[in-house]
Length: 260
Ligand SMILES: Cc1cc2nc3c(=O)[nH]c(=O)nc-3n(C[C@H](O)[C@H](O)[C@H](O)COP(=O)(O)O)c2cc1C
Image (cartoon, rainbow, N blue to C red):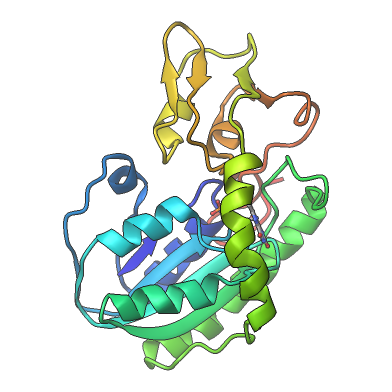
C-alpha cells in the first residue's frame, strides 16, 4: 500500500503514479492526521511511504503520525521522498523509525520536484518551465523505482554523513520553533469563505470566527492553505505578494504533461 502526505501535489503525483502502475492502493493520510485517527493500516504488499521534505527531514507531524500508527501485514517499508533537491537526514530518520516498529527498511527513492516554499530568501521559487522540467524528469524516473519495488529490491541512495546529522538534529527543532510563525498569514478581501484552507491544513491550525480564516500557532509552513486557495486570497506578510502559488495540478496532468 502506498501511503502519502502532500501539501501542494508533488508527493501525491508520485504516490498515485506508483500505486497505479504497481496495481496497489494509495492512501492519502491527510484526513487521518487531521482526525488523529491511529487505527491500524493493513497491507498485503510492501508499504511505500511517500513524503515531502521539510527542512531536511520528513514533516515532523507526519513522522509523529507514522511512529504511532500500526502498519500490519507486510513487513517491508519503502520510502519515497519528494524535495526541492536535498533530502537531508530524512533517510536516516526513516530507517530508525522503521526499525523501531520492528519492520524492515527497504531504502528510499528521491524525486527532485518543483519548489513550493515562497518564504525562503535562499531558495527562490522556480520558473514555470523549470517546474515542468522537473515534473517531466520525475515522471520518467518512476518506472525505474517501481521495477525495483516490484522485485522487492533495496532502494539505494546517497550516503548521509555524520556532519549532516550533527548540524540538522539540534538545528531543526530551533528552526521549526522560531522560524515558522503563522502570525503573518492573513486572508485578503478576495476570500470567499469557502473553508478550503481549513480543510487542507494537516494541523487543524486554521479556523473561522467570521467570514475570514484565522491561523493558530501550530503551523508547519506546508503551504497547503496558501497554494490551494481558489481565489489566491492568502498572503504571508509582504513576503508572498506577487509570488506564484505552486500546486502541481495547476501545471501538469496526472501523466506529467503540461496543462498550458
Ligand atoms: C516548510 C518547507 C520546507 C522545505 N524544506 C526543504 C528542504 O529542506 N529541502 C528540499 O530540497 N526541499 C524542501 N522543501 C520543498 C519540498 O520538499 C518540495 O517542494 C516537495 O516536493 C513538496 O511536496 P508536496 O507538493 O507533496 O507538498 C520544503 C518545503 C516546505 C514547504
